[in-house]
Image 1: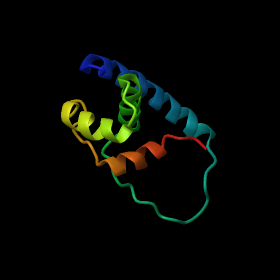
Image 2: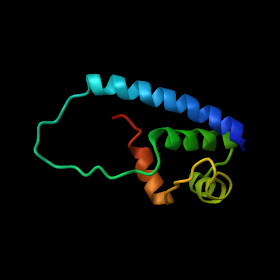
Image 3: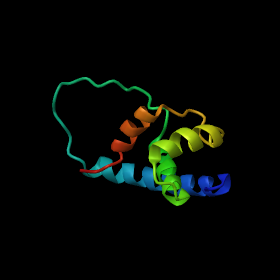
Image 4: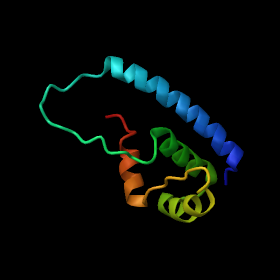
Length: 100
């Protein structure tokens, strides 16, 4: 299992990547011209935090993300991620990170 120092290093790299990618993506993405209104609902976990949890899962050697999230992240990584969401919400947040 990754220790808190490794998690901090992973988070730093993910956060740097995420901020650089958002700048690039906002310049090159196509814009929709529809009149739909969207809520600006807070996610509670940033993209960088979601990436950090996923990378630490892959480094842990565990095979089941749900078990890792519920029994390791919830119990041992509460101090690193104080605004954790439910597993179902986490799955929804990780889907936003995929580029189609």
